[in-house]
Image (tube, rainbow, N blue to C red; front, side):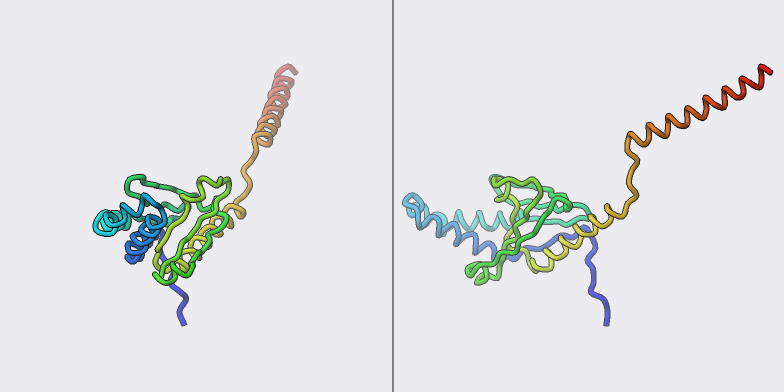
Length: 184
């Protein structure tokens, strides 16, 4: 029995192409429930939506490196984000009935110091094998934390100043001893 293969970092993930259809229908549903959107719905379904979902899909990128997670999404408003792995508190896996029908899920990233406005920018939809990718992110984050706790503590400024003071005191004593031997 062989050990499971650990992917090399950086790791670029792939997105499920069905996300194009999901996004097209998701926006169409929002248009359907709004008065203004009903007028625009035929234009969305017959061309604009197909163009938008195709280009949105082409712009999706996500890469896991040793120290961070980089992702990019959007067409008119592009979001490009780098999240240090040590700041990630949790990666939530969301798959409701509609998402499961399309064989999709959403990964939401909870980070240290995040506010509610940023929370919407830190989610990705349609990553192929998202559960495995979630596990890889959390494992790499744990490796970083373990490596940091195993390092020798760095001298503080106070310790360094104390060491310099003691060294100067020793030099002064040696100079005084040499000066006293030269006088006698």
